[in-house]
Image 1 (spheres, one colour):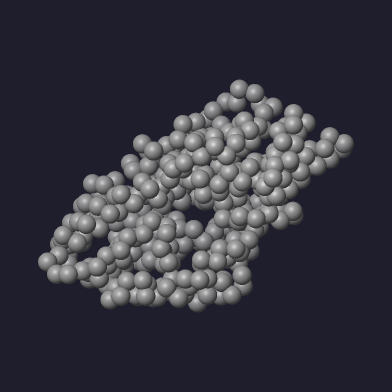
Image 2: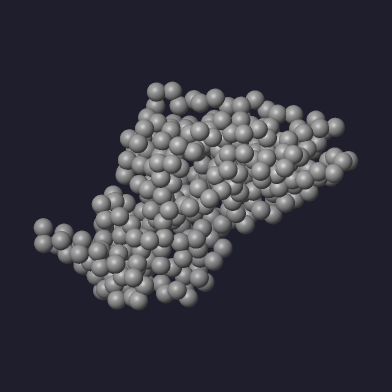
Length: 350
């Protein structure tokens, strides 16, 4: 019966557009000691939820009592490169993470995970309990995905798939239904350290060790306060996330465009006019970015990031817009816009 249940779920997952659907058991993650040491060192930064729920993250049976199986799924968000020649090469342009070039994946995958979980429940005749997550639950999902054979945790601490490269989301269904498990994936980084040397802020202190406090993705998305002064110049023109460590990985040569995310791609997301975006007010921001990853940073976070990017790449033409932001009542926005003006003025003098 359990074998049939797994087959039904995998068939349904394929029909829904998931790239892979594999199973691991519900035992405690092997990375528990590494995770706890990482938390003790404070390398999670201001992400207090990672420490608050650490017991559950280290013991998934606390999330779902009588847990028997974890179904891990992968969803590619790879898109072939689209070159957009700039209409004016003198206009400062911004860079965003690849996953932000789509509508919010949490919303997109949630509907499909609910449908898949319903199929799992129907596949058995006994009472069961299943709980799905898409990057939202108190679990060490990369550990679970590696045990299920979805991919392996690379030296940059992200999951790598031999069949999808680095460009994919992972989601899970925790269930009390015992299912046949798949073989775990082994690490296949070899001697490669391209991701470590590619990091602009040296956030990857050594293989498999990331200091989130220096990571540009953390600084531009998760951090809600001021970006440390010494790290601002290293952010360059990145305004939402950073893919540098992912982009250099040799396994990306196997990346394929996914079926689920393709219809949800945003229009022209790679040609970002920083000056134009900096002129958005809060109302315009909400109208334009509701239902997208950008909504996570709120208006103040995006303006903070754009200010830093203009401080690094802007010219005197951008000072009027930055001056308006510098006079904003939001202290975070004002602080970073003021810093940006000073950077531009320093470049002019030198």
